[in-house]
Length: 112
Length: 112
DNA sequence: ACTTGAGATGAAGAGTTTCGCAAGTCATGT
DNA sequence: ACATGACTTGCGAAACTCTTCATCTCAAGT
Image (tube, rainbow over all chains, first blue to last red; front, side, top):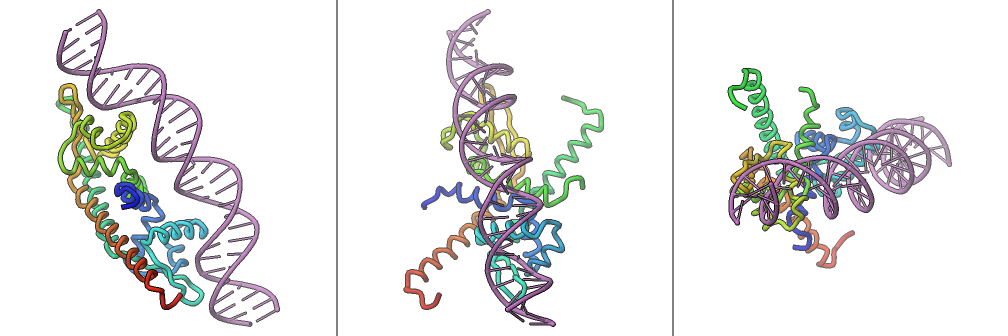
């Protein structure tokens, strides 16, 4: 393997490390969207959206097709859904742990 | 929810977007490790490792306990394994797609 | 009390990302 | 041919991340 494996993995996760890109992937995992549709649902400058789409395109997570005047984007790797789900689950887990801590602190904690 | 949700998700994936942090999580998802054990398996300066552990600690993905002279780290959220697995699967998928493209190109491609 | 090994922390320089703007392409309607 | 709507691209300034160095803490052994 050319590039060390963890490097590739890190690179991959880095791609998901941006709010707009996450939203794009979530929207696309529901159904294909034209750029102007994404633009309506994500509040962001067109050029910025285009940049983020470019990032996703370069990492091959999405593909684009011109449909007349519009450009339609699709998820290239369906497994992305699973990943987003797994992420959501962990986030829920973390949030639960934090609110539990909050509750304990609120109850005049018995021990430091 | 205070912070927009996608922001939180992005934040979370960003945490995984670093080779050392990925390796740490992979090693810890096998079993707990003391810092000096991680240091043996990951080639990185001690202080750098400590920084990356700090990042993981702050996002609550790992926890540390002092065991005499050593500090032992553990995965805080077991679901992380699933996430790493899902990531691996996608990466495999992408690699497969690329090598297929490679094969097609090698066969004197019939059409541009 | 002193030393030593194991980690953590702070700060600074280098490098990378992000965002908005201006300019460019491409297909469609006139 | 031209105007327009739909995207993309290049560019520079601001914001962030990474890595290393020097410094610090903590516990165990002497």
